[in-house]
Image: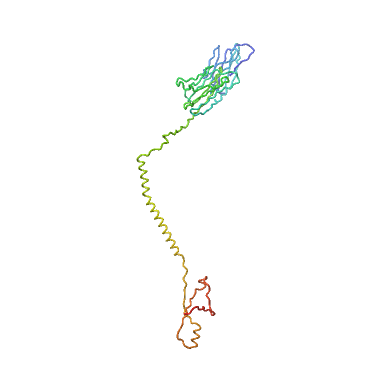
Length: 345
């Protein structure tokens, strides 16, 4: 955060104060003060702030490292000159953006690249790179790789020495501020947060990558022993033989039962047919009615001879009337309405 006082007079800076306010009505807190060639950070900003400007040129610029979310607010710089009652003030408003966390997924045994590239308009080159690993939120950070000048040696923490030995390689182009690494042979215990810190002189750039490790599904190997058929035990063999014998003995009985059932079914069917035929309505038998009729020839003979020695009977069948039997042909009648005789007995 810059704070430069420009003046035509060559006066020496005697005091510089930096103060912080998180809001309009919040109390100002000291960040750093400079007096008599002595710079003193104050409060929660200790070990994170320092003057980087040239005091001899009235430059009281401040460098704030490891910016936190709580650092968002207004920073005020006050410069006092020698033999001068006026105070030069400058306010800088700092907006803190959330860290962009990149997430990667890798299977156990695979290799994955963790990127870390600093894009800057300046021509400064990184002088130092630190890669740290944390397995959890409250877990201690573990150094997995350090780069300084021409030294490129992965190291492990004292608690877990050699954890990333021979598994981490710096693959980025350091001349272009690329500090990307390659993690080989990913393990289940490698899941966690990886933080890259690039140092450009007095500036530090950080980037965090979260690695998720996916377990591979176990594969079942088929061995010749698994393909060999299982030998039946003594009890199993006895059960199988008993089932076969019982089936053979019961087979004739099942055949007889099926035959008897079929025979009974056939006889019942034939009886039903006979009864149904008997129940069919039979045609009414012909009814014959006989009556004695004296023929005209006999009457005339009797009247002519004057005697009657014998009486002859002529029997004729009487057919049903047309109303009772409409399908029968009409009966032939002689003149006078009397049926025509066919045969005399």
